[in-house]
Amino acid sequence: MDPWKVIVEMFKSQGIEYVFGLGDTYINMYADELDGIEAINLRHESSTPFMAMAYSRLTGNIGVCSGAPGPGVANLIPGVLEAYSGSIPMVIPCLSASRETKGKGEFQETDQVKMMEPVTKWSVQVPSAERIPWFLKEAFKIAQSGRPGPVYLDIPADVAGAGPLSQNEDYDIDYPEEFTKIESFKPVASSEKLREAKKMIIKAKKPVIVAGNGAILSRAFKEFTTFIEENQIPFVTTPGGRGIYPENSELALGVSGRYRSEPARKYYQMSDLLIIVGSRNEAFQTGWWKHLPGNAEIIQFDIDLTQPGRAGKAWEPDLFLPGDIKSNLRELNNNFSELEIDKDFSQARLKIINDLKEKYFQRVKKDIEKDSESLRAREVIYKACQTFNDNTILVNENGGQDTWSYSYPYYQVKSILGNIPVAEQTCMGMGVVGAIGAKLTEPDRQVLAICGDGAFQMYLQEMATACQYNLGLTWLVLNNDGLGWIRSKQKSAGLKTDTTAYKSQPDLTKVAQAYGCYAETINKKEEIIPALESAISANKNNIPAVLNCRIEYWPNMNHLDDKLKF
Ligand SMILES: Cc1ncc(C[n+]2csc(CCOP(=O)(O)OP(=O)(O)O)c2C)c(N)n1
Ligand SMILES: [Mg+2]
Image (cartoon, rainbow, N blue to C red; front, side, top):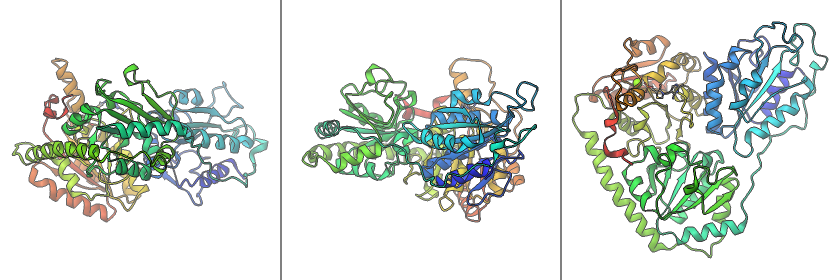
């Protein structure tokens, strides 16, 4: 069997359904008709890791992307960096220049392994065709074990049987017949530690859970549900943890850290136990490590043994539960039934959060109903959340506009896996392109990407991909004619110049129509809901939609009002 066929067969053995790339080299996964696995051709290599990330988040499976030798591989870097920071299991097999002619001025020769090293868990060159199965098997293990992440496999042309001088003798290799799905290792904490955790939980009067991306990565949906419902513990999530449990539920308080809203801030600050489930306590999650409630003890669940205390001494957990989050929560739920929660405590804390939420929700409603001359981002997002159904997948993008799509209750993620966030590197384009990957993976769910005009224009060529594959998703473009987030930073730093305004801006509605999307401009509040409904109808007919929302110009972060004061 030729090496690429072996690679494709091995992907199939892992249940991988798609590979994302560009069909531009004469020997790779895209050159042949693939049987049982689909090669999705995008318009730019930089988009391919974002598609793979969305696929992986929604399925829990390995994402696969690739680029052509030299510049094609270089174009993968931003997205692979994003996947590395988001702990997304990915395998990236790419062709490289033949070793037979190394150093002689071989076409597109460059050190691709070194390029990928800082942004992957493992970056390695495959030395011979017959070792391909071994390297792929290792890649599957490494990508999924411990804290997951991307693996880069460099396959020189001579190894792939395409060297300019000779065909490699080992070109015809055997497919390992016995090859089956590789499961990642799921270690569990000791039962003493789990018992201690349960004791701390029942003793606490105002515990709060902070659920992060790690909870999603371990697919702990069922176990998390049982855990919070049986123990009646309110929860916040990091952006990465959104979609672990519905936010339109009694115990939800929205997003933590930079984006938290008033009820979350107030309850969190009075809490006596933080239960951190799969979060690295990064700057955004912790308000730059300032949000730690003075009287709280900390329990931290994480698969990665380097996490405890990583955010600083104050964040050193009182109890660290190493291991797979799903398995640890399952053990905690199934054992220690003699340690019962105190119903008086749980009722008291529910009353606190219900009161906080009720007051805050009334303010939000008034804010939304307020008359305004200009179109406000928060109002568009609030109405989008009401108009799209509860099972919608919200895909976030980086930029000032995300202030509102992360803000509870302006947008509430109402379903399990109802959100694809950008990872901690917040690479612009992740959301714009990730949304296409989401719709491809989940064709029966509505997909809504909320993005700025800056991020949208970085990747708008992928509208063609969405049209080509008949993917009915909606991009809600919050268009403020420039890089609003940077603008606000420049203004608050007292800079006199504004280098962020787009003084020449195409009509994004016409651009989208030219690509084949349904598109509409929204200028006024009355236009919001009819436009959203038209987009949803277009999506039902497998037509992607772009809503070009001409939102107010905001020169500084005052548009956040008191909601985000820490
Ligand atoms: C690839 C990349 N380049 C630059 C940045 C820095 N950055 C963060 S937000 C932003 C502006 C985003 O503009 P837009 O998408 O229009 O959203 P807005 O802030 O206007 O709401 C920039 C340049 C980034 N996060 N990613
Ligand atoms: Mg903008």
